[in-house]
View (cartoon, rainbow over the protein chains, first blue to last red):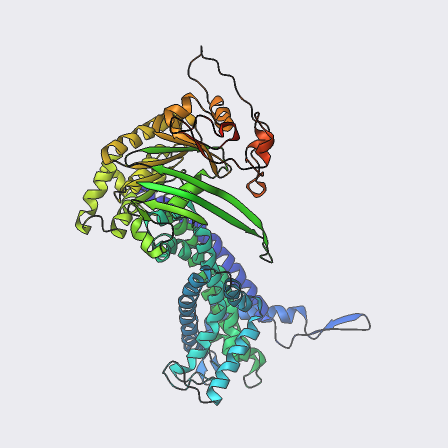
Length: 316
Length: 323
């Protein structure tokens, strides 16, 4: 009973600051998105003027809070459907990319890291560069290259994975999500492979690994039985970074691949003239708030796991 | 049982950026010895003399640069890693640091079961029974199997390390300073356990230590190492009672005697042990030796066998009282 209380207290200590931080960020987001899109400040002959009064901007921000709290934002019609319906439809698409992208990055990153850690004089540097180059390039460039590859394969009718010809744009079928999933997994996979390789390299210098070799364990036995937990813990520790990479890539990927998810609509609301500015503003606020909540919730879960499960496991 | 012939290990130093060779360290430089079944060879020397490297070479935890390791008539120095893994059943090691040589994420039971699985020592249904037998053998309780390493004291952890080494029922065990990180009160318990187990299981040991009293307590034979070479080896009582090599004499004189009436003339060595990157020419000990002769820095002394089966590498004994 006492132990449960202590665990509950510990969780409170971990979660409450994160919730406070989330509320602060959400307030900031709603304030910023509440500023009218046509608000402008100009300076001429040393005189600075704005096209709106402070009262008008304040009223717009307060209205932004109001429509969110009374639910009006969710029922606002955007291109023939309510903002809520649009949010759910696009969220499903984005979550598919996020979830499968993360899984794919783990599936590629961990084995790649294991291979990278097996250094030989000739191929060690090449293997290292394979992971470091994607990490050092701007994500727009890496994702752009992926799209070029997708276009090249499509225009030359090159079938892959035995599935057939994969469409390089759109979101109508499940096949349309394959390239975006692959594109979103490149950077996290490179990051995961670095973490994995580093954990293995560090691990092999530890005395208990030498002892395991002495027992007769093969390299595979050592990685599976002695180092795999450490690899997973280190990946979990670095997951806040990975989530950051994935979410920032999401908007670029959805835009470049015309995959109409949350990220696509965020940019669309901000740039389009086809939707009424008020509706676009409401949509933008709703989508960015949702994205912030999802991002922060994942972050909280990862941080709680990192701060509770890892120390417990490491101490047996 | 096990014989080592001209064993050498050279580590090449490369620059961190361009990977250009910057020289090499001769950690072990032509070591020869033999350990009979059921006997212990104590390997003694200063830090950096190559004792632990020799132990690791014997178990192929490091690949020898040159030389032969003959186990029961078979040269095991050049066989492939995969094949050698099966041989590890016969060759085990107890490590110096009982804190870091146990995987903190595994229970003691898992640590002990792993070698049983790897070498098919017993049927899987007998794992539990075998773990209990091993724990009992090293003086731990059956309940300890479910605990993690951090729940034990240093001495208990070293007992687990010994149980792990013995789990494969080996013929030869390298004891790499098994008591150096333990309290003096615990050291004697572990040493007695090591000796008892040797008698019980007819094990051969290579016992590495820098504590001479420990070496004297456990060893049948002693080899003294200096800068990767064995400078003197022979029966333990003969080496301790009348050391011949100037380095051995200095080493023995530094060892405290538990007798207030017995006074020892301490031989103080000049300077520090040279770095392995700059090994002196000729006799490696010549620049610290009080009996230095002209020949010492020019010609490397060959091993000479004295009348009491002692092997010594020193120009002072060239052509004298050999057998």
